Image (cartoon, rainbow, N blue to C red; front, top):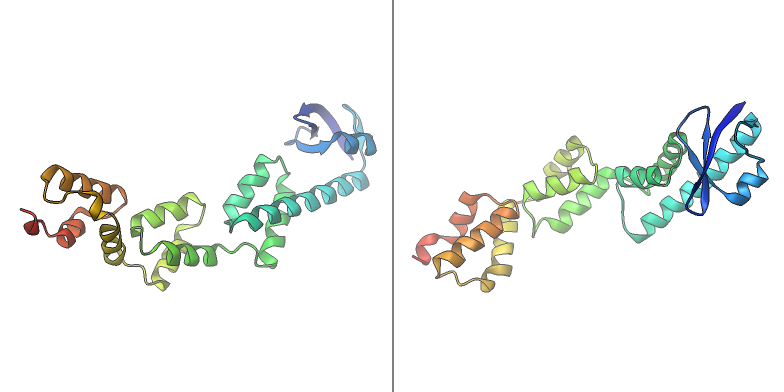
Length: 200
């Protein structure tokens, strides 16, 4: 049995608190259907029906997010938490998605590295993947298995952007170096490829 400790408005829906736990969100029609009222009691059977309802909704939400673009486990969990789904529902949804190979952080990291390896430094790629919630060990393994090369990425970036700068002008040259360093490339690598002696 579960005691309803609070019911409060949340946009067009209602937040329901049970036994002082974190709230979950239901539509007003569902509140009426399950006869949820403050200080009321929810049976185990009704609770299970509610959780099944939320699980179905969480799966639909997660699949919608993945249809737009690939997501990491962290990104899916973050979105569902913001949607106020209970932890148990989030855990069930992640297992469901993993079983269907709809989320796979190892594969995500490999594909991301392959896509970005010509234009981003190793440091920048590690930062990007870390922000997406991928564990460092997974990132390191993906880098080890990839053809990631800072030299290749730096050469590509220099070729792509060098015409925007007058490299015979010291200020422009330095600005170009600063731009490349902000992209995560090492100063020594930049200098060796640009070869300052060509310009001065």
